[in-house]
Length: 265
Image (cartoon, rainbow, N blue to C red; front, side, top):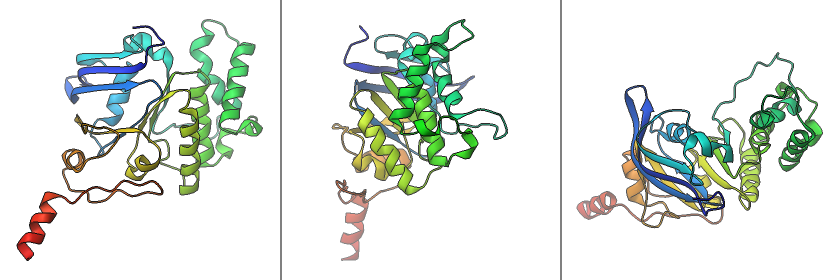
C-alpha cells in the first residue's frame, strides 16, 4: 500500500500486551486519512496500550497493524505522538525551543547538530500552536495548557501524517481544553488524528468517528455515533445522555429504563 493511500491505520485481529499478559484482544479497526477518530473507555481498558501497539512500542501477540501500508517499525515515521503525561525536570535548563526541536531528533540521523530545515520545522510547529513568542522561555514557566501545546508542537515538528494523542487535556482547565480541541480540529484538515479521552462530551463537537475500548473495541454500525450498546459494553453501566455544546448527541432510552417505567406503572 503506497504512503498516499487513503487508509492511514489498518488493524486486523490485534491482540497485544506486556510480557505474557494480554491487555487488548481481537481489535479490528480501519482509520482513513484525515479522520478525527476518538477512543473512549474506562481506566485500564487498553486505550494507551492500543496507541503503543500502533507505534511499535510493545510487541504484537496476534494479528497485524499497518500505517499507510507499513508495519509499525517502519510506518511510525509517519506518526507524531503526544503521551498522556510528559514528565520533565523543572530544574533542567531546557527551553520551549529545545523541547520542540527534540521532535526532529529522528530526522537528524548521526549529525550532532540540527539543520536549518529542522529549525524551520520547529518554528512552523510553534507558530501552529501560537507559542513562537515563548520559544526562549523555560518549559517550567508555562501554564499546563501552554506546556501541552508545546508537546503537541514537538510532535508536529516531525511533519507527521498521523497524530496520536493520549488524554491531551487531562491537566488543563476548561477554557484551554476548548482552545486545544479547536486547534486540533483545524490541523485535522491536513493530518489524521487519533484521540484517546475520558471526556465523552468532547466527542460531540470535534471527532467524526468514535469507538469504545475496554480490552475489546466496541463500535456501532455507523461509527460516527455513540450507541447505548457501545457505552454499556465498554463501561458495564448504562449512559442515558451525551450532550456538549452545539451540536450535541442524545442517546435513546435504554431498555432497562423503559422496563422500570413499565413496572412502576
